[in-house]
Length: 358
Image (cartoon, rainbow, N blue to C red):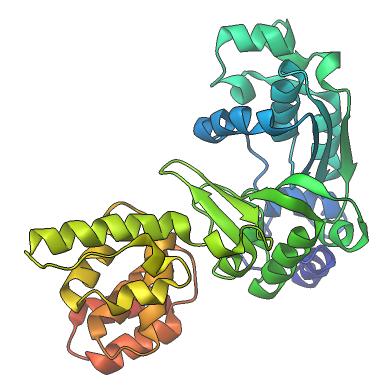
């Protein structure tokens, strides 16, 4: 009965039920297990100010582009991320409207209060703590000026995306999509695309990647963070420029190393990354994939390897694809079956299959 109730609550919010994600044995009975308590136990609410520091440093420069900003934080938890935006934009003298959405009534109430303990501000320097908070004993209170033009709503994310007609410059949904099924993830990413203004950006958690994003967003990244810009007619042709630039440089380096007199111009890659793969031999291609994996550039390695895997019968290609799918939390069952079909004597593949099958 309790399992059925938990599933019912999670289904209401479009969340995927996984047995064991919620303490079910002795902590709560059916009468005390409220909807809000289920959501709190199912999702991780822990956060802190200026998480992923390099991302916030990037945004400080990005905000110079214009004067008015509309920002939506989906799964805002206790509000740290929302106030981060307010701190930066207020300091820069920009006009802004920020909305934070979370399904937890308790977390939204805490966000509206703007009251935090040391754990939330532990990575901030003393100068910024004094600038943004009033402190009493060991409690930090967000100053009133940073609460202006900030709104927190207790909402179901799916329902909000179904009802809102607003356009936003930035939408964040960090470490939230992991709680949804693949079908719901695709739906959410498409709805977010609709509500982003032209050249608006989407921010996910560090390391989050979903293959369908390449169809909707232009990627901008460095080794510490990734942001996704909404594709428009203006930037569609440049969609894959960032990671193709990397492949081009790497390809040239390998060709030069092997004394091959072949060079590739940027114009060669600008429309389709498959053209790049057609002009690099197998040995160098594998070297590029290995190098990307070693650098933990999993999403770019996966995009590259996906260009040739459909037409390949090379077991090594599929072995690397399995590794990448595991790293990106994708379903690797079909790929491991193909890899074993092509190379049934690979003991490492059989060990990986045991892990996948659980």
